Length: 111
Image (cartoon, rainbow, N blue to C red; front, side, top):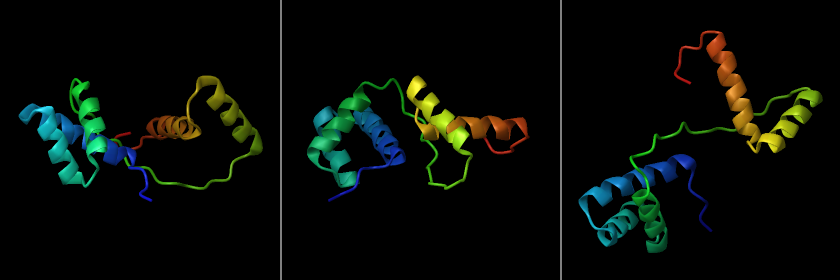
């Protein structure tokens, strides 16, 4: 069984579909996208349909990597509670918190 594509792969395929739609009709874009990425015709169709609704190409997100950290139980409980309340992933909350911290302390990389 094939695994699902990553968010980065999904955005790259959508962006390629946007470019193909500028040059070709949908049927040709579907065929070319399928060939280029080795995906089925139905998958290519879904990408092309989604790309047709985009006003422009999407920004490619940073790849993600799992990290294990030990945090106080009280912080974990609060993050889980907040996650449910605002319907945001725990990863999203932690990423935002760390990004704010890094910016505050002079991080040099674009966050």
